[in-house]
Length: 465
Image 1 (spheres, rainbow, N blue to C red):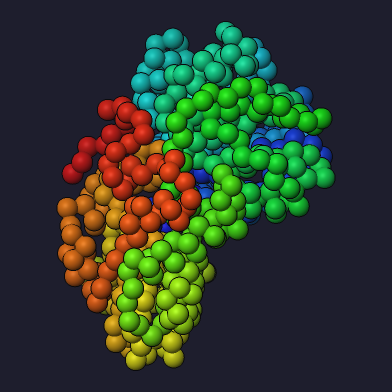
Image 2: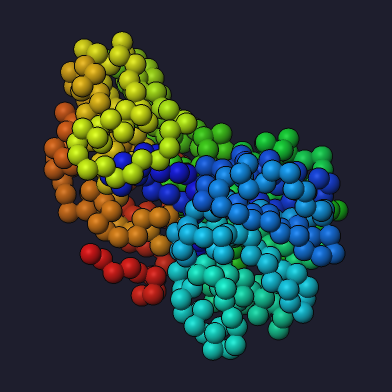
């Protein structure tokens, strides 16, 4: 289909981006609660934002940009609504691909907000076009919605959604609006998170528990993988659950989710802290200070520091108000551009052996430039420790990593990567260490191993260059 902005957009040295945030709400002040929840989930997508509400007729507003940019003085009527923040992983960038998507059908209005990626969207689209359906976007969400509506019209809501799930492959966490009723649906693998909660106004479903906290709500529970939940103002009930092997995305814990979120029973901060401890256990080094790459390396760096007894310090300060930087032609320009994004605290860095902790390395360009800054500002040694194993393979389940050319670890040894980024030493957490830090074995590790939990249709695979 069509979340976390690139950390540093320098020479394409960005972090992986996840697709979207979804929110659904039913009760008093639906529009206001959705706005606050979407703002809490802004890290999951900054490309576009949208909300659809229902009060007997549908009201929909969506546009390009942040939630605060799209929604200013508007108010959408209705006691039920769904909202969406988008980062595109399938489908072009443009307001026509912004969520939520809504269709008027014989059952009434049906709308969905989707986080994930439908791997067989191309095949489904072609089959639906043969049946006479017309598509107005390149988004796989529209394909999914059309397939669901087609089945609901024939079999009703319960059986129709179940039959659609048997046809739809890939990752999806959905907030579904069907007239005055809200539904929450998660794919049988449970790739993407989806959480049910309640506040004084009503019920909420959201991609992360932090959004529920933001509207002064309490988490009820995670939507189970393969489960459809019906939510009304009077309460909720589980309609069905398709039992299946689980395969939760490890990157939710490593990078995507907010550290204050709890997903499938695991607090993200605690997982990342454990990753740092395990990194220090597996890969010790003599050094003077542990420094995180802000913001994503902080929890891991703290765990590394506490276990290793090497002092922790904020040695890099991030400028939160700098614009994204275009690809620049020479080394000096690239260095200066990074200095706009990041600057060192000289007293922390100068004359010190630094352990630099980050959550992941994808292309390596950003890390190389950060190490250059540290050395230029006086670091005597830079030892890089990484909170995920080397990324070697594409993701087809909602993460914007599609070609093998994206990955510095593909066909390069750790020693080759160390030389490329200019570190004195480089070490990654092991796959077993990652699994133990997260506290579960039911993980999707496809980007680390090249072995996926489900078959990938040929139409989902890009041509490698």
